[in-house]
View 1 (cartoon, rainbow, N blue to C red):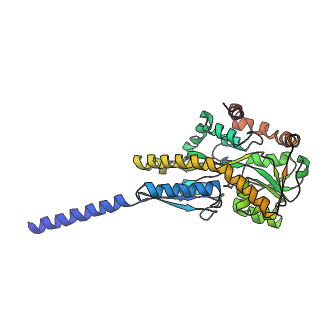
View 2 (view 1 turned 135 degrees about the vertical axis):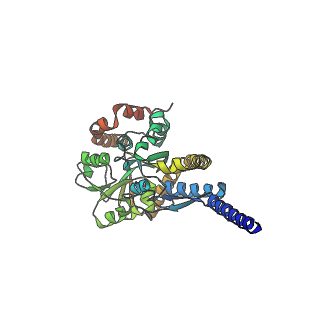
View 3 (view 1 turned 90 degrees about the vertical axis):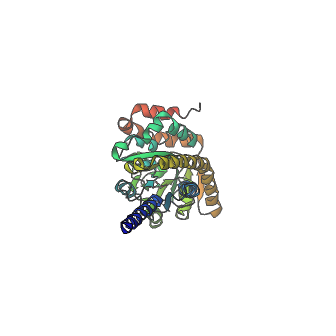
Length: 331
Ligand code: LMR
């Protein structure tokens, strides 16, 4: 009898220890991205990890993989859907296979500045895009800014015709492809990790990026000119695998949601300053002339690129474009 009770006790004990071990097993979140750490997205991922470490008692472990070290931009979305990575933050140019509406962010000269982009992202229409891919297994958790894009090249670009015949690297986006075709330039799709080498070897002659991506990838060392066009935006949607996210215990999910909201505010507050700092660093490096356009010259670029809107209005939706244009007016 005693023997049986002792055995039962031992068994119960080991079961409860196993249970405790199971409860203590942390949830791992791999957060992969393609840019350097000292960029708005890179800093955001690190801050997310830091706050989770500080506040979640070891219940969740975040592993950050910068610089395409886990997955490059061609593979990261597929990896998210397969559950090989739990959070990524692709640029808004990289969603066209999942929803055509998000292409809106690539329309050239749609937003006057990053504040207008922010207002649209926070509008009901912008927020609706975060949940627009849930049927495909992707949940949007928020928008992170990088900033407005500038055109770089080894030729001085002042008028749109200066871009004719040049090869420009583009992200995997039909809108951006058309944008360069509208200039009678040649767009070349290329993953982010290959851009520096592409520019260095002359596979492409130019690119479009915010200053933080140019500086952190050392693109200015292989580009003699940057024209400050602010012609479009390069921002991100932080996304997760819907099944993974919905499968998290309620308390964990809400803690993570709160932390992410805090990180989002911080990233979006810092992004512009970071880009301006990197612009100054490029000027200090003395490798690259930054060309400033007069309002009239900028208007010429707008006119040259603007026909792209018509081509995508059907896919994106005229109402959505109207809502985005309305965001140029501060309330
Ligand atoms: C690019 O491919 O140029 C960007 O999407 C990279 C990034 O994530 O900022």
